[in-house]
Image (cartoon, rainbow, N blue to C red; front, side, top):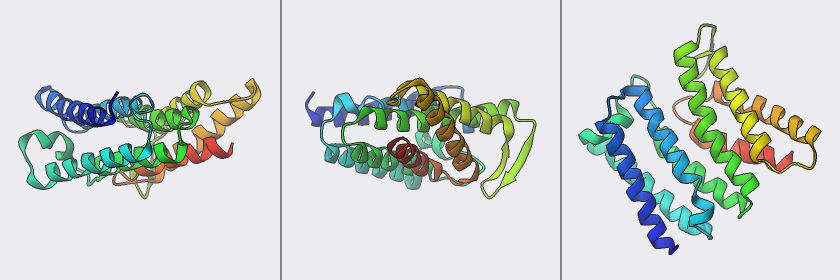
Length: 211
């Protein structure tokens, strides 16, 4: 597909996603996580839509500027991103994190896809499981977290690395998945204000690259 059409398609999909969640009955954090999941699923298609990193860099810049405009202009449709009690810039860091990982992975899907999938599903699982079932809480500089939520981040991240990562044999696949899941769960537990949307994909990429 023409990269310019791909950029238009992605931006249109992002706008449609925000509009659909705005019209849905979802509220506050659940609505925000729905957009997080949708954005992540869109970004997982990038290896098939783009073949050069600078197109993704441009897309990330346009997406960030659009989300920044929603933050400051405060239209009704943008409330699904900002109508939460805590302070967060996560939606602004999300496209930047994805663009950095796309550039770093340089066409290697076994590095790009797990990093973005962890950002998409691992982070969301931790938030939703922690909110719904988090009974055993602990505090970090990021605020109150739960063992249940952090466990969800660990298991989902480890499963993603095991399935999507490139491994030479089963023992190395299991070890890589467990180590990556542990580090990612620890990082998610201590990061606040949406900074995990930038740090988690880069951390995931680095772990997969070096392990």
